[in-house]
Image (cartoon, rainbow, N blue to C red; front, side, top):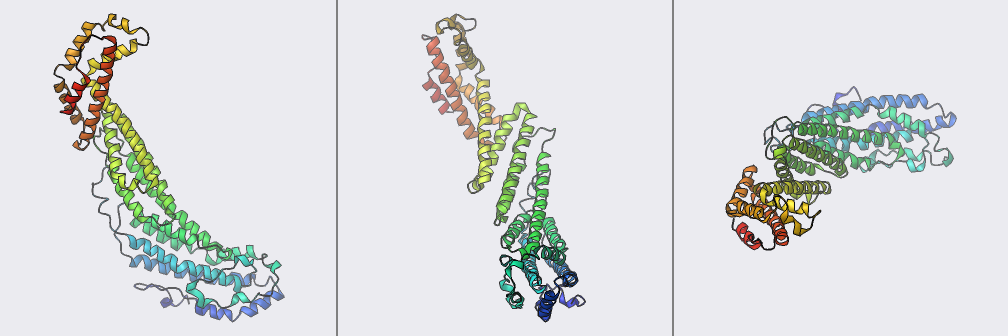
Amino acid sequence: MTSDKSYFSQRGQLKRPDHADLRYKCRTYARLLQHLKNLDKNCLGPLRKAYCSSLNLLLRREAREFANELRASTKASRNPTVWLDGSTGSNQSANSADTSIVSEAYAKMLTIFIPLLVDESSFFAHFMCFEVPDGNKIAPTDDDNDDDLGIMDIDENDKAGKKSADLQALNESLHDLLDGIQEDFYAVVDWAYKIDPLRCISMHGITERYISGQKADAAGFVRILLDDLENRISTQFSRFVDEACHQIERNDRNVRQVGVLSYIPRFATLATRMEHYIQGQSRNLVDQAYTKFVNIMFVTLDKIAQGDPKNADILLLENYAAFQNSLFDLANVVPSLAKAYRQASKSYEEACARFISAIVYYQFERLFQFARKIEDLMYTITPEEIPFQLGLSKMDLRKVVKSSLSGVDKSIITMYKRLQKNLTSDEMLPSLWDKCKREFLEKYENFAQLIAKIYPNEPIPAVAQMREITASI
């Protein structure tokens, strides 16, 4: 068989391995092998080794030729491995090609060879007269019912007590039978990774589905193969995640950065694509990647903000707002992204509160500083004594009110312009201006209450009047 090239896959032709004729010929010797074992239970050792060695060569040749032709016949454009680096063009991730044919090729490799390897394991166990516990028998797959040659009936009358004796020897023989074939599966995984690293997600789900279907000990090596494949896929995907994290970290440079950082909207694009690839148990793989991405994104954002203290809160609130806007739809259906969304929302509110407070305080610094002095003194002296303290007399109050609130409408307009100037996008201006007005009115209301308590006879503009002025701007 190995000398006949037409038996194997070749250029332009994928061939499904067919061992029906081989098994039929082997069945001729099944009774003889059983009699030999009854005469001398150790005499089958060399024969088993020879069988494993020969069939291993055949299986590896079949897998190698099939995998080579599978890759050669699958035409797919490579997708970018750089998703989150700020130095690449803005449309690089949006133009990604459809690479579903790659994971379909991997699925085809498993569909053809996993049932074959399971059946070969089962056939070998019974043909070579291994005595395994009943719970470890493998039923043939639906695709290979024609290959069931009745070998399982040979030992029907043997005593059950002997059936566990050969289990270790069987596992060692199955290793010899199938060892090395994993390299061709690895080659398909590595090839798929080079075309589109995100296809690891769908390949992981496909592999997990096959793992859940392998339960019998006679297919133990097949399960080991599938576990190794799953680990290989996870390792390759981790490489992609680590590289993407490095791309995010490279945004942290000694250059002032303003506006929304490039990796924020790109992460949303990446997450959308990753969700599209999820199959079965690959949900956990993707969620772990999200957690790592988000942690690195937020840590990097904080580092960049710390490098420019004057504009730190503006940078933070704009980026956390962009993160929420870009992931709103996904966060509604993906719990791990919903957690990140809530984290971004909290950080946004904190940065927003600091920024708005600074804008208001800067414009009305003398007014609210006067109020702060009064509040500090109220911890140590009575309200009646405060107007007699240095800098807090009635005359001082009138000067502060006159300088801060005469032409207050112009001051509020100036505050609006300062807010507008600090933002890189007008999209957030309406909501932030509303917050700004509320902050000013809250501070002014507190100021008015203090003045009414400490200087009951001193007139100042009413809170209602301030509310009308801010509403008109």
